[in-house]
Length: 279
Ligand code: PXP
Image (cartoon, rainbow, N blue to C red; front, side, top):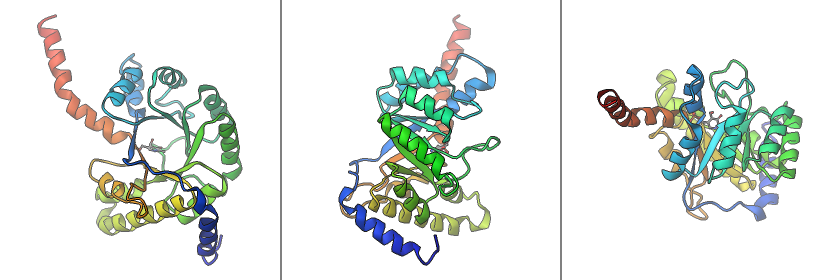
């Protein structure tokens, strides 16, 4: 798409979708990504931590959804984890996966409430960027078709760009999840001297993409890199028509697992001190 043609295309796409704007929740939902609890378990091959128990803790604490990423290399979450969680979970389950036939077969069998299609590179530490919906369109479209048949809703993990919003709407995804990684790194001051300026620019990109995504009839979610501070400005973006949060769902993992280790350490130490002193 040429830069010149883009606004025109966006405007006409918005017009044709105006009747079917998805309802916004009164309060944003938190999807808790528990991948890194599985990372800790896989490091040692231990039977703990128990992921189903973790799901219960998240539910009891007010988490609205559980998110797990079944990677092709199975570095953290395993197939049996997803099956066990599916059996016991009380909140919606969101399965992040690559757009492959193997993952699609698995998802259709296990039936999560949502699939979030993500790009996957074997050696990356974490999901590095949004989906390439130009090169990957037919693979993504195949997953969306299979998911719709199985009554599973689909979100696409994409860059917060106009092009990605238009492509996601054209593919008839239910939602986009905006990749907020660059904004979050900038807000944490991790992108060098330009961090402050980049934080502002990336925030604007997220806000613009969220508004366009919604106007195209997409649910708008966000995730990657959030902590207790950088999430606030993004969660404060509202839809002017309803006054409700424009970004309906936040999927957050690494920070929560790190924070849980800190705030949970006191109890863990007390329990172990008691165990060795009163065996
Ligand atoms: N959303 C998606 C699609 C992801 O791939 C990830 C990382 O696994 C997250 C959210 C959570 O990111 P973080 O662990 O940085 O909170």
